[in-house]
Length: 110
Image 1: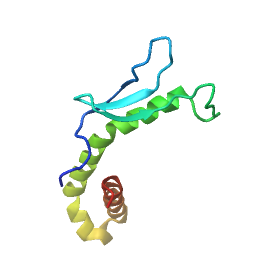
Image 2: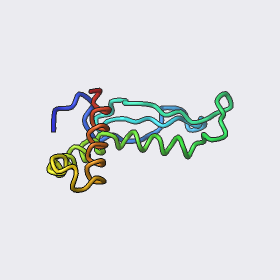
Image 3: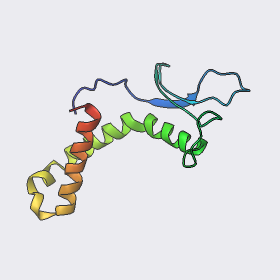
């Protein structure tokens, strides 16, 4: 695994610092309270049939899991490095390893 440029894990999902009377958005923050991202909940100004608070919460959880997912994928790629060399023996495994490598590159901006 290489050094990462992103804020280290763990990332957590919380609410923005709004009064309890306000339906706040989801805030993704690091263990030392560095703000990473904010996922907006739909409100009267922003409505979409396919987009609701449950989708917002699910998106926030996925974003918060990103560092651990990246690390796990890098470890899987190392564990299956022989599959890359053997490619033709198991096409599905080869394609999965290639997909993992592409996802890692995308996450790292490579």
